[in-house]
Length: 186
Image (cartoon, rainbow, N blue to C red):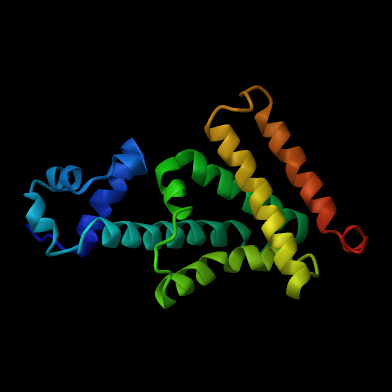
């Protein structure tokens, strides 16, 4: 059958994409692969190992897409592209996006390296506004919280559906204004 860890992870991603992260169980995964549950343990050590592998995969996947979105861009253009790519990812792959919000415990060196690579496009956007050090860290956290907040509220249908594209655009305009050097000096 050619079953390996990569195929197991791919099948798990498919379940998450179709039914959401909470629906993923070892039994459901084994059924999807056409094997008995004990056979899964040859490829993953258990639910925690599976969730860790999915987090690593989803964060890397999101990071690649965000990187592609900001390539060759800077300032406002990069911020708008980044925000749109993040929103699109959360809309198109809500289960995967949810996985990115549940880091593995313990958070080891491999997880830190994957997160660092995935965050590189975001750091580039922040740097393109001339920010670095602690100022960049605080601005980055605020941006991430604002974008994620909008995306999460939208996913829960907590902000309605009429005019949300314009509301999102205006949010990014406000965030961009806040990143201007004169705005941050106050």
